[in-house]
Image: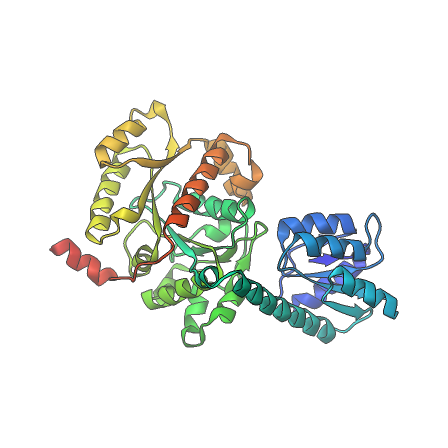
Length: 400
């Protein structure tokens, strides 16, 4: 995040950073008070902070952010080179102090230096907090359905945003609908790199490389987008997906995975690694028929205990009620999201999750309750089962 009361300076710094692929500018602020507010909301990794600003100066803002926003490294930018300014900046919690004007190389090297230092510091803090917490793997939540058009992607996106923005978890969102994924569109994001590009670098894939492929949404969610074209889906294998999930589990509290409405090799990996499977349905007979078949398949794969049923677009006027669904499927509903087509379609067209654009609506309240259920279940299941099979296993299970 860039903080400077001179718009031209903000623009100049942004231009310098545009040439660095691993650096993304997530926001700007033009006074110290605005900087504190935006830092709490955006939680950037690094803040470039001017000293002399109105309302609240950079030193006071640095001190406030250092106390309130963990994991955020601050670099002071100033025309003042006196030792006293440097001393005050360091006492306030700044990690670096650079003098204007500076070159692009000076700026970039400072950013990477303080970022790496802060990452090492966070690792040390986690180590002190305890070995159990440090070694815990992130929870994998796979959003699935055996019928298209039930709102699966919308639920995945809003759940991820809710867990990040309102619950404060670190969240990665993976779009495994490899031919026609909509996650990036629903978040109004234009991916430069996708999971198919990442697959090309499979042999070099590690946490650092994966991080470079993840887009940062304003909610704090990191997004791995689906391929740009349907034919690129073939580039992504089950082994690619398995490695991505394992790496994400080391860095994020929750990994939300959106899947296509069919059983594929990659989606089978997501089901195998899932701690929770949110099976989404709507109130119509074709969907209920497909969901019932899907439950039978999941049962044969020994995933039934992980399945949680989510009823989307719940409406008592459709001739089929929630009670009918539970009797037909022989399961209890975990969550019911009310039908609110105008609000949901509006949020989709704007590319902003309704949990953020309309946080006090009925559907947002229901989604928030779903998130609470996910978190509550996640606290009870902290170990991941070793995956048993991919699509070959599915076929053998169905023919037994």
